[in-house]
Length: 160
View 1: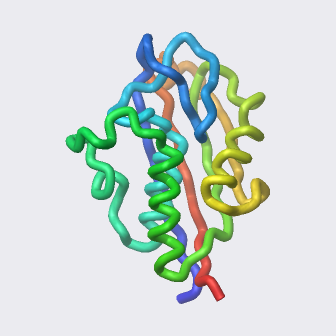
View 2: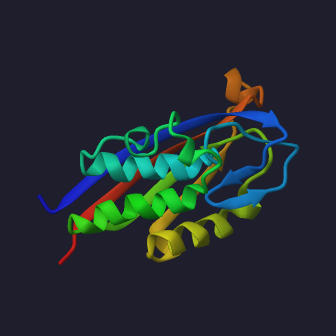
């Protein structure tokens, strides 16, 4: 088989006193995502999609929240380590497609910066990364602005 597909999902609670980081970009907002690392839900979903495509487990296996070395970690550095696992096995990224669910802040002005930052970390072109933002239409915890979630699909191909 020369192609593999993986999906990833992550959700983090919004909390005062935290920075809001998505796709490696610091986004101005009165709340940020709560988590052991920088809580970048988009990057975490991408990491899980890449790992899942190759049956390598999930990010908790590699970066457990119980390990103090990952406290406050920059998720872009973690993503680079996951990408290394992918390339060491002879695989390359065909494309990544993600959806971020957040009532606020509006993410559209930040999407290109997120794509550029993720592409740099993954050593691919920004055109290989799709990011869409949507709301939860005021429904449930995401709609009440209690958190932000991200879904990702990643397609890998065997590197020639």
